[in-house]
Figure (tube, rainbow, N blue to C red):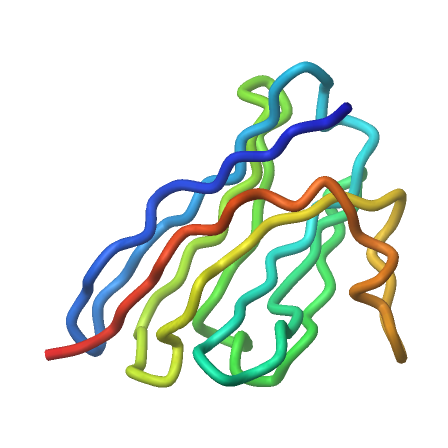
Length: 125
């Protein structure tokens, strides 16, 4: 079974940057779409961005435009989420998950599986 492990979270000041990594073990990521999601305390899990197996990206929220960039390095079996201009409202646990493609629309989260354990991102001064 595909296993995903997130890393790269931490404490950063507002306006700072972080790069999250989603690394796969046991199977190659080449044929999977990988989505990044986040969940803040007391809120539902929400989609951030997704990258298809061919490298096309899907934004799941307006707040990522101009600030977040998803990318993949198949040679390293890793997907990245570069987050710039971070704001306190970006504080959440960030998760990655896999699917056959970047679904959108109602209940799109249900199409993703092999969830990682998450990595905490805290934006605070």
